[in-house]
Image (tube, rainbow over all chains, first blue to last red; front, side, top):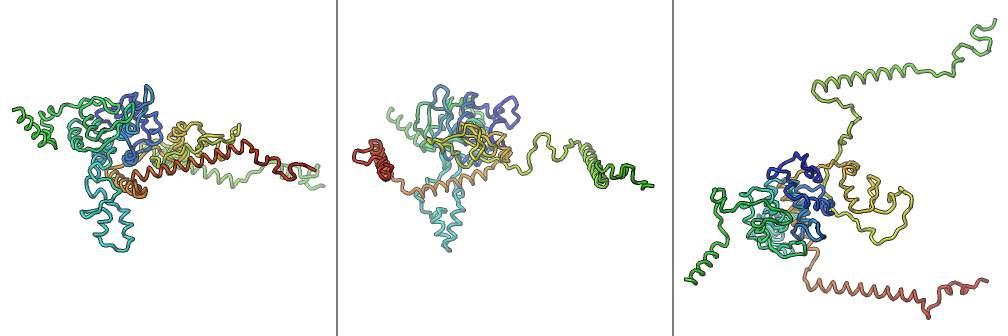
Length: 257
Length: 224
């Protein structure tokens, strides 16, 4: 079990808990940033006593990604950053992080027992009608109040998990896990020092893979993908746009030639 | 000759009633107490011996040296709802100058009934609610249970359907309709403000057409 607050992680001299990337996970963020997080009201009120499951409640309420914003020279920690720090201190295992990233890809994820209980009181509707109403199976009517069902159905939860993967996992796992997210075109709101900026999940993940500093954190240096391919740790990347890119190149060459 | 039991002083001097002012002991009661104590000491000796054999330290029962965890302590959980810190904003209240320990604790501020502490600041209040002192007072251990991937998936599923139900309850999210609702609400508020402003103005001016307040008493205020 974890402690309700992060006090065991804060003083690195006495740290004896689980390590990520060989160190105390709280040291993966810089000390001034950690100070901003711990002093924020969001951390004190809403990040106390979270475990991997109740963190989902908070993550689902997120409305922006971001690091530190506004507030003069020091700035304030955004809820996204506070939850990312909480995730670091919780040190969840692979299955949990993959659940955050890719929940919602299968129909089985959406089975609703409450609906079942309510429907059963209707007095014996046939199973096909029940399925149609409830939204399971092939013959479902789309519920107008339901967002589209897809992997990573909650996009801010997915962004949070992607950030955690980039900060905490090894290079091969980072590439393998984050590359599928490069096809997620959904919009995200990013909170910068000055204000809000529109971005998308794939732009955010691309920043994670290429930039040095994202969300008030200096990301550890990811080796080039070509290097890992040469070492036979990864297969060469097949882009989903592969055919279109080749066609484009062919057109360009044809035009010049 | 007088009764040898009676002394020259009349009452039986040197007899039992002469020292009746002294304490007496119930021998059986104290014998029983001594036996019980001997039994307890023997039991403790046995327990110490067993602890030494097992290599453990003997701890006297009911005398936790360092505030041990009570057996019915619950694991800590995250808050389910936001803290309501804005309830008293804008309100004026009279506060006792001395420390009045009543239902609201000492004076104004955020009161914690479990620890009988008042805080003037919501940040201090929240920090207190997270502190060891408060958790012990509430009977929590400060440790949180781990959750596995299955529970995380279950939670995400519950949150999904909760979102769908909330959106269904909200009803139509047509932008035009929401704009209309907002405009109507604003109109209503403006009307309210206008009405209140007019009332206040009327009251302050006193009104030349209105009857002055002191004339509204009986007999027009004259006392006969």
